[in-house]
Every structure is written in structure tokens, then in C-alpha cells.
Image (cartoon, rainbow, N blue to C red):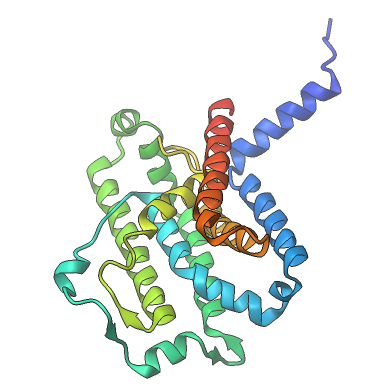
Length: 254
């Protein structure tokens, strides 16, 4: 005799299956809600020029979060540039904020990053990195070259971190070896918000992109909501903490 499954159980099972296949879906939904909320609080944020300006601001964190998806890595920036505040060539930061073939330069960069992420996800390398992150010992026993894959993960992280540094330099028009230090925790938070499990084996760099945008939108919401300046970091931190806790609980549930 066939047991009839209640519709609610089928819906829940379908939801769990969807989250398992696409862990970045909650990040996209939250990102859309925050974008709409920003528009309600400050309609000017919906203008194309405002969106482009926001992307220019978020792009360094987006790139860093993509790199963090593959592994956590710290550079030798202080050794390379021991003196902060050195100006960059005018042509460099002007190009970052200018248009190329009628399209804002930052949109070209974001499109290139999205394309690279999609390509890596389709390559054998992307699936192998996921397998190593899920269970390193099992991956090794199945014949995967685990040491080489870990090195490649660090190389990907370093590549995206370098691109993030270039974008941050273009956005600030100055060189500072300590400027990116505060983005380390933010990039990890963006990864988790995007649905990637810190324990490995589950996630997507696409989610990390939306996770980074979420962090930027949260800051805008807190500002436009009129929260006093001295409490803005506290409120923003609590919102991010709640979102991270929800992400962790969701990951455990799936």
C-alpha cells in the first residue's frame, strides 16, 4: 500500500532539496529585499548612477568574498608597502570610475568576475574543490590529488584578493597596506551569508557575491533608517550576526 505524503511535507522536502542544490538562493532573496528596503528609505538609491556607485564600493568585498569561498589567505601588503596613504596615478582611479564603451567600468569587472565564477563551477576543478572541502580524507582515498588541489585553491584565493586590492585602490585613489584588514571578517561573513558552509563541501561563489552585496545594503539600510551614528556599527553587526546564525542553522538543517 502506498503511503500518501502530505502536501506540506512535499513542499518542505522540495525546499530542502532546492537549498541543497542552490545554497545561495536565500542570499539572493535577502539581497532583493534589502535592495527594495533601501529604495523605500531613500528612493535615490534606485537610480542607475547610484547603483553603479554602490557596485564600485562593494566590488572589492565581492572579489575578496569570492576568493574566501575557495580558502582564507593573508598577504604581505605591509611588507610591500610599509607607508600608507601614497596616491595612485590619476588615470588609474579615473578609469575605475569612468565608462568603457558606454558601460561603467565596474560593471565590466563585475560581469567578468561572474563569468569566471560560472566557468570555475563548471570545470572539473570546481567539483574537485567541493569534494576536498566536503571530506578531505574521502577525496584522497578516491584518488584526487588533494595537495595539488589545496594549492590551486590558495592560488584562486590570491588571484581574487589581488583583484579586490586593485578595485579598492581604484575606489579610494590611495595605497594603504592596512586598508583591507577590516574586510577580512566581512569577506568571511559574506561567504556564510551566501550559503557556503565554513566546514566545507557546500556552497557557491555566486552566493558569496550576493553575500557581499547584502553586507553593503545592510549598511545603507542602517544609515537611511536614521540610526544614530554611534549605534550604526552595533546595529549593523547585530543584523549580520543574526543573518549568520540563521545561515548556520539552515546549513545544519539541510
